[in-house]
Image (tube, rainbow, N blue to C red; front, side, top):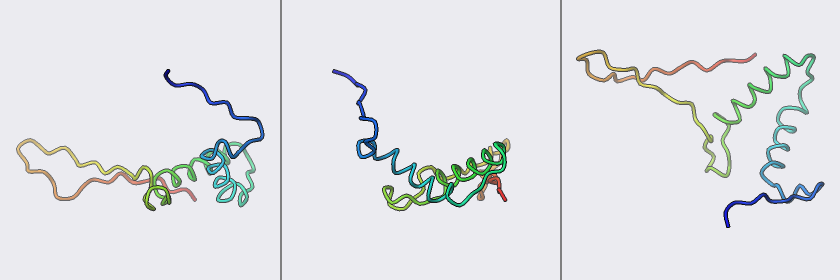
Length: 96
């Protein structure tokens, strides 16, 4: 009983569809179109793509919604003040 490790034969990508799907999207959407001139540049560009993939890009398996949309935080009410009508949105970093 309990959880057990699943053995996946080497060279059997059809046994690990989630990873293979992600690897395919990473290659098609990012790696095939970029040339990295340094490790630092690669880290920055890949992190930017990862954030887009995880927060903005619509996923078909989720009804074309992003898996982890950006969080909107309401500012804490001032003592005795009513709650604000507009949320404070943290600016997302823009990578050029």
